[in-house]
Length: 219
Image 1 (cartoon, rainbow, N blue to C red):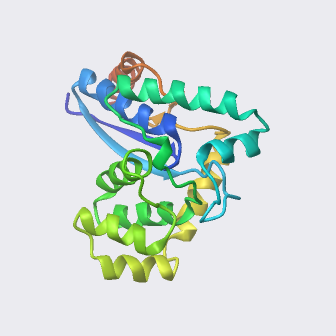
Image 2: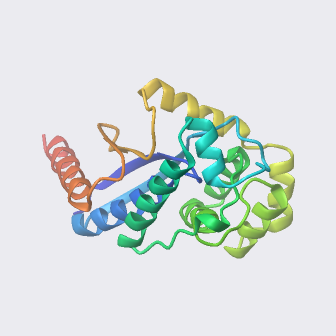
């Protein structure tokens, strides 16, 4: 399969379904067995969250959604179990609820340096598995350095908000597309897939896009 299929993914660093969806999409892309180019785009699920929220994710979700604590705990237990089914070991007891806008700026920085996919994976793991903070510049710079990016330059770029306009442009594009929740996958600029669907769903969409692209080329 010589044709490359572009996939644009809107997602947030603190979205549990986005990490699960990432794994399911990767499995679908492996089933497709063709060339796939992935680009991540910013989406803020809770832009009003303080950088240092005083409480746990259970407290935050209970307050934000107006749900009883016991119900939120069941929700998180369910999503943790689904994460386990795709090899992800969520640790909600260690999660630092935070504002993710600067982590999105870091993802755009990493994209400019050809490392966006690595940075995305590191940020998701940092938040859901490792109990790291993804809302503060120094913590984010440490994570960036772990994948080989220049820590000092990351601090400079994030302090100056060099990539904030790019984050805002992604959010505006999501609004234009009518995206209200993430993850949201746009396959070859044609097909939208919402949520952490099964790998077969992604593979089928990739095959369909590839067939259509090949047919267009051969007209």
